[in-house]
Length: 275
Image 1 (cartoon, one colour):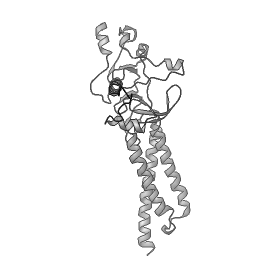
Image 2: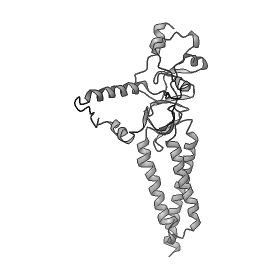
Image 3: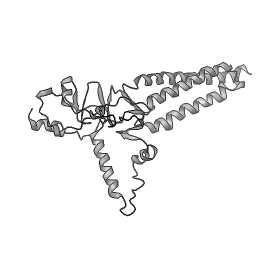
């Protein structure tokens, strides 16, 4: 491979992004890639805890964010030094509802450590989880509790509330642990020595990646053991939240079937037994 060809391979891919990673394997020391074409590595965050980690996010998204900032600066009123309040894009929604969060790709770090690693992070589909999943669980479960579980005329024994309420609480806790957890975001790595360890160059994020990491189109980031994006939980599912996701799916199914069973039992009890 010539130097010109190697430098060409290092350029980020500007084609339409998808979940399939665009990788280029390397041969360690035999590769003559131009170091200037590589992105900055985030290893400095390990040496200095005050430096925030640099995550492997879409280079195309980074360019778009820079372009948006330049457009906002150009639209700033030179007299009042005020920017326009609305851009009439999806960015307005994120700006006003996640104004205190640091954005990494399509993830929002609501609470993070000094090194930039997230403690509480919202995923790319957080509006669906907040406005659909949570109300659906709370409203339906509340109706079941009010009209059946805590209703003295329903014939339901009082101790059944000690079963139903903890299941509901477990579902909500599991959902929080899935939705607000880092799914396994990878740091940006530009050290060519990682190629000798079997890592591959990913053009979409401008970083090397291990064999288990994949690019998430919705999250615009590299995620370790990426499985899929679940709109019901509002985030991507990867190595760090896979166990919590399975617990949520199991528990919400238990809650759903239990609620349906209670409704069927209540209708049967009211229509037949009481009469």
